[in-house]
Structures are given as C-alpha cells and as structure tokens.
Length: 181
Image (cartoon, rainbow, N blue to C red; front, side):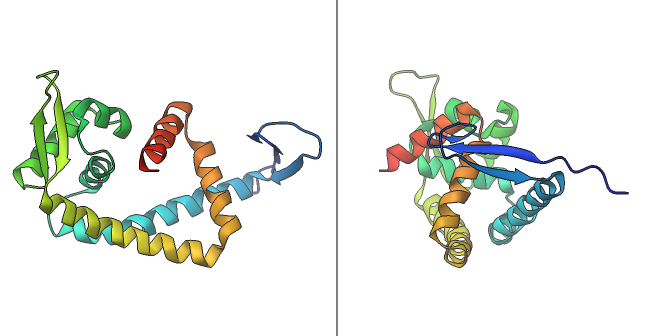
C-alpha cells in the first residue's frame, strides 16, 4: 500500500537552507525521495566503514576504537572529557575503549599539567601507524566517490552533512576544521 507522499519544501537563500531571499530556488522532496536518501546514507555508511572494519577486526577492535583513534589524532592532547563530548558516549564505554588502546600501546594517556585530574590523550607511534592505515582506507573510498560525483556534488554533500548536524556538533566540527587550517 502506498502512503500519501507529501513534498517537503526547502528554501535556499544566501544563508543556506531555510533562508528566504529574492530569487530563491525551491527543492521539492517527496517522502519517498527522503526515504531513499535515508537508505542511501545507511548503505553508504556501511561501505564507508567496511574497509576499516576489516583492519580493526584483526586487532579485536570495533568502531568505537576507530572513532577514538580518529579524534585523538585530529586533536592531539585532547582530554577524556572533550572526547566524551565529541563521541557522545558514556564515560564507562569510553574508559573501556581507552583502557584497551592504552594497554595495546596505541594511545598514551598523560596527566594534565594544570589539572592533575585531567588525562590528555595522544597517539603513540604505533597508534599513528594504525590511524594512517584506517584513514587511508576511508580516504581512498571518499576520493573515488568525490571524483565520480564532481565538485558541485562534493560541495552540496558537505552542505547537507553540516545541515544535518545539531548546532553544538556543527560548532565542534567547524572548530576542528579551523584548527587544521
């Protein structure tokens, strides 16, 4: 049975989705088109994580380990508290992941200089090698997809991803990008 398809209207102005201006363009999306987008994201995520999952499996690690390694690499010296905020996991869950990474010599945890209660996280040399292997796998897949889609699609894709983030996460994402440039 086919449900009624209600179009969503997204207004695009100079300030992005939802902003009105003269000459705005309209994008009409049916419920079915939105569902197709959701399904595409699920399948794309599966592909995006497939190559790193194979690498992680050889070490008995999961995606939580990968996310921790990724953000410790992106922000050397980040605190456990900051990593908790970015990953949105429980302290117990993150501690279990970090304990394994520290035991395996992938992550080094250092006591804070200003606040002895803080732990600052760094990748060891072995951690940097693993991070590079994981990111190379995902970079190859992203590079191939971006080349296939073209520059306008890449720009649109980034806009869609940023628009899907809540404000706090968008701020953290932008701060991370600014720190790299």
